[in-house]
Length: 244
Image (cartoon, rainbow, N blue to C red):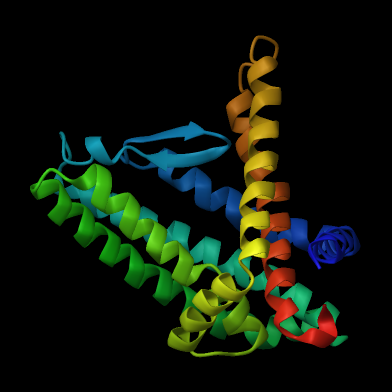
């Protein structure tokens, strides 16, 4: 099954390369927004990360508001791109017109997933603030984020493919991870290898290409991230035995 899923994903990525590339542009914008805001961020492995330990130092109320708005903008763009790519795979598997699928579903699904991501962002910030107060943010925040990531892993696919409600999609995500753990582990390994390989290449070439880390950000946003979403969706579709 694992080999078939990878083959399906590569085939879907190649067949829909242009439209997937187009819908991946929001990923690039989403990851670039934090770099332009007052967030204490840094770029590593081709992604933008937040220095949580620096969040409470020298930030004005305006900075905090701008950070929050920037986060919302990033989440919306990520939601839009994720939904669009899922719709492309859905249309391919159901043999429907891609344009029809995107036009009819993108607004509804994007808003649903965006609101869900926003809700969990707020929960994460609350946990961060509370854990920071007690000096355990280094442990509590990662554990909470990991649990949330499990609940949300297959949520976009569940909402777009099966039109599940958010709570149903979260339960399905946990169910899929539990019952098809090998696929979940495979996704993590492939993601780690792809991200690390690209990062290492540009680290080696850092003397020749000074802007390498930002080029990695572009490659990850337009190529690797979309492929991982396609792979994720194809893994979700294995719940239907006819699609194995």
